[in-house]
Image (tube, rainbow, N blue to C red; front, side, top):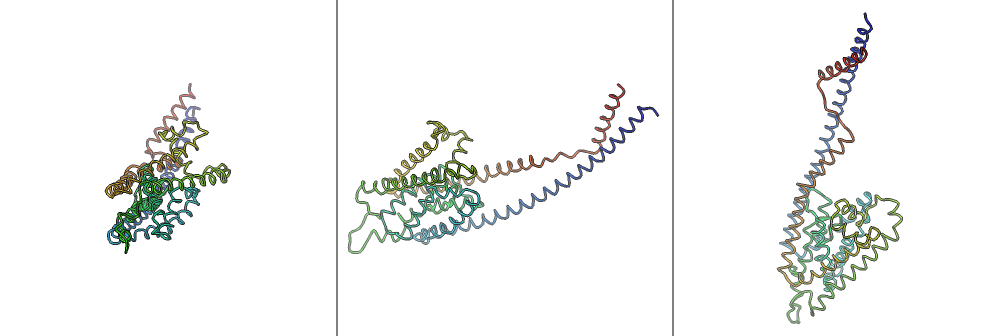
Length: 383
């Protein structure tokens, strides 16, 4: 037997072993792929089941809220207080685990705490009510629209956010969180629909009052709807800066995973290279924090000023309520139909990169490919 024939037989034997081993490897990969897909199907089914339960509870809660709004509007405030007392501690536990707990120092939680004091301890204090009204129908209400807070019944976190924001007009960001849109109507009901408010407008032994709270003149209105709330906002901004940027500065520098509103906003704005990112960089990168505070302050001043005409006009206030609810519902639909599918696709792409699975080939094609490789090697030997 010639050397060439012996080499060819050895090559054919090696090719056979390679094909056999390749088929075994591919069979193993196919089995692993089936197992992975089976696990993913089970996980997807569990997730859908949880979302279905959350969606059901959200729809029932929304329906119950609408019934209560028509039957006993004066009790809406107590429902809001119940949700706040229950969900904010739960949110702190969850955010602490995710390293998002500095969000709880944001203005929305500061304002909601003041709301809680007003509604439970001083419900007939007219001046405190006007301050809360300015927060609720000013920066927190417009934050719903600006930060695109979404009413998504299948998302517990977004649903909580909307309630806090809508109920009392909490600023969704950050509540970064937060979506309990229906409850934003708390101060609307107190201002226009609460029977106790009507009674206060007709106290015994006194003349008829035009409104509650009683408005002495325009300067009184601007003082308690604009100047005093703006001072309260400034106090929060100073305390927030001292806590986050002075007292906890080293902690934040050591752990970049700990999130604050500024970190979250700047990261998203930089990625999108949008108008906010360009405006915050007008004074250079080293002054972005200052620009962020300045822009937020300007936003607060403008939105608080708009609460004055809203406070005086029932029709304008109704239109504004409809705008807020429509915005959160629209954003919720966009999240379900656009954002969520893209998130799922992106998640699957990341999984496929981490565990690449080669497409299965026909065994006959593998034999042909190995035979061609053998022939090429023979030709190389002969040459």
